[in-house]
Structures are given as structure tokens and as C-alpha cells.
Length: 74
Image (cartoon, rainbow, N blue to C red; front, side, top):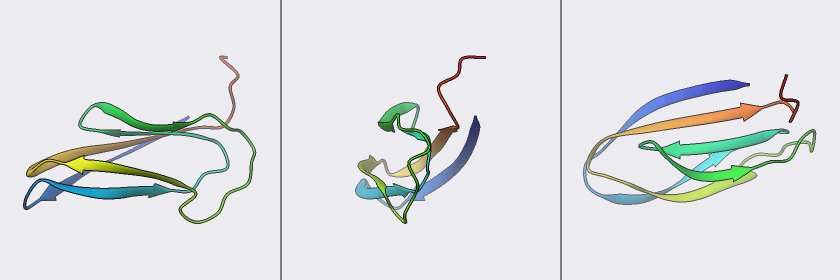
């Protein structure tokens, strides 16, 4: 499992597409709320295969990406 985080600053409320590529399970969070998930493992990957239209608020917005290699709980 791996996480990545970033802060995006928007000049105004706006809608954007978050895009990711992963051959494994992925979850996207914006300001603490899950906005996308795909539980699929070892599927191959291609550019922008995961997309989510999300609303960014004016000011700071926290983006978190979670990637899991497989569904083994250990």
C-alpha cells in the first residue's frame, strides 16, 4: 500500500478531472472525502485510465491517492 498527498490551491470554486494510472486498486480523496475507487488487481495500466470529475473549493484543497497491490489483508 502506498499513499501520495498534495495540496492544490484554486483561485475559485471549480470542477477538474483527477486522473491516475495504476495496474492495481486505487482510491482518490479530495478534502477528506473519497471521490473515486477501483478495486482491480494486476490489470495492466494505461495513461489516465482512472478519472474522476471533482469540485475544488476556492483556496487550499487536499488531494490523497491510495494504491494497493492486492487484497491480501496481511
